[in-house]
Length: 176
Image 1 (spheres, one colour):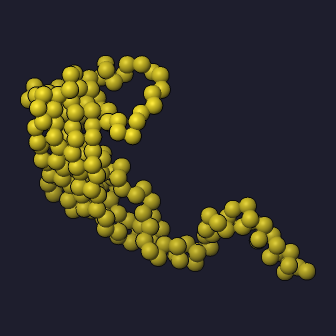
Image 2: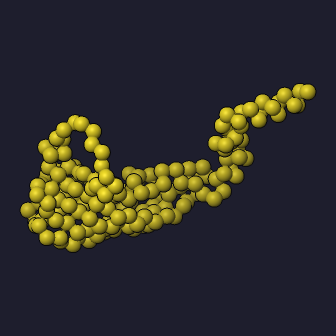
Image 3: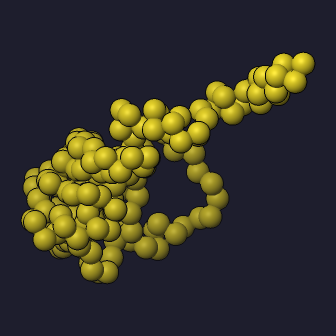
């Protein structure tokens, strides 16, 4: 699988001791990722990892950071934001990942598991996905609530059961 930001570390180069890896997306990769994730722009995406073998798996721990511009979902206003996420990943062979279909409860410190593809681990794709998951899926500008109210969209509180009763009461009082 080819991705916009691919930084593959071959399995045969990963040993039992931590090895530091630093990656950064170039302008072309950032442009492609901004299109993929529906961003106004992706001004920076970088990551640092300590990778090592753990039996048949590979453990990658580190940090992903990015400078992103998203659009307000209400007004379309550009909203600059930053991502600074710790990441802990466990890359496993596909057969290991698919073992057992039963549901397993994970502890808070459990590692996200990703299947190894093509004899390597793609730290670039893992970084891009980490960044995307860290972003607010519905970013709103400070004036979004006012714009919604002006357009006649009511808040969750107003839309609740008591909000509907208040509207009915106002109608009844108007007819009385």
